[in-house]
Image (cartoon, rainbow over all chains, first blue to last red; front, side, top):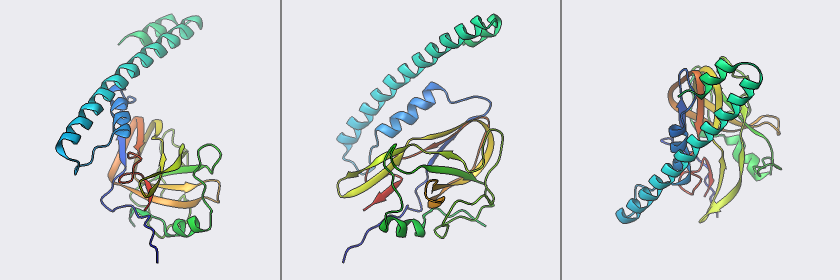
Length: 97
Length: 142
C-alpha cells in the first residue's frame, strides 16, 4: 500500500508584502529574490547554515545592486520619453531621487 | 465564516484523473484571487467563488494569473512552484487567497490563509511563494 501526501502544513504561511503610497523598493525586491533563491533549514548543521547565509548575503548584495541599476536605467528611458512628449519638468521629477 | 488553509480535497482527486497541468507556458492557466476575512474557504472548496472576494482600486474580480514553474522533483518529493505575484498600485485588504485552475472550469487547487488582514494602499500587494524545495514548496507530493 502506498500513501501520497499533498497537505499544506497548518503553520505554513505564504508571504505577503504590501506597501502604502509607493511600490516596493529595489532593496525589498532583492530580499524577496534572495529568499526565493536560497533557503536555509533551521535544522542544518551550523557550518553549513553559516556558509549558506553568507552566500545568501552575497546574492542579496548583487541582486540589490542590479535592481537599483535597472530602476535608474528605466528612469532615464522614462525621462527621455516624457521630455520628447513635451513634459520636461515632469521628466526632471522622474530623475530626482 | 473563516478561511482555513488547505489543499482542496477535490484537487487531490483531480490530480489522480489528470485534470491539472502545471507545465509552464503549455500547461493550464492558474489564477490567484484574494478574499476578505468574511470568506468561507477551506478543504471543501471545489471552485472559484466571487463570494466575499476582496475588492479595491485596481484589483479585478477573479484575481490575476500566476506564472507556473514546470513541476520538478527534489529527492523523492515532486514539487510545483509559482513566481511571486504582485497586484500593482492597488488599495485593498485581504485575509487569504484561493489558487484555482482558470483553464479547467475554475477548479480549486488550494486555500491560503495570510494569518491576518493584509492591506496595501495605493501600493503593491505581493504574494511571496516559498522556496521551491522538498520542505517548502507551495505544492508538494511526497
